[in-house]
Image (cartoon, rainbow, N blue to C red; front, top):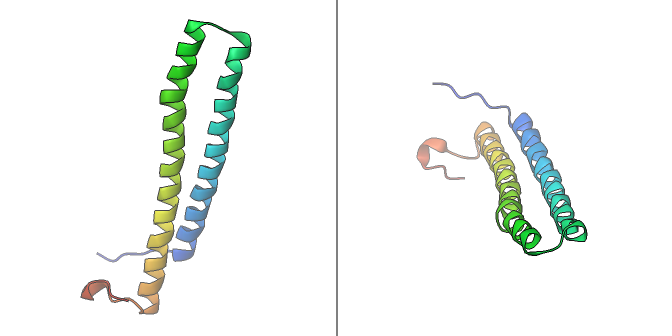
Length: 99
């Protein structure tokens, strides 16, 4: 099976995914700020439990997701670099991937 890879497109896609992860992280922080504002409108044990639930579960998971998205973008960039090296003949895939 022949592999076809457009390294430049892959790099651009990786950049776009990383940029999206940064935007996602900013939105997650904005959401956390809005959650903090709930206490201005709602006080008491119920409010504290609700906010705690949001922060301990959802906000943490959103931050983790932003990191995972960034990792995927970086992975695509690394794969793009490997294909570029293969195309240049500076890496021997069939000999253990040595540069």
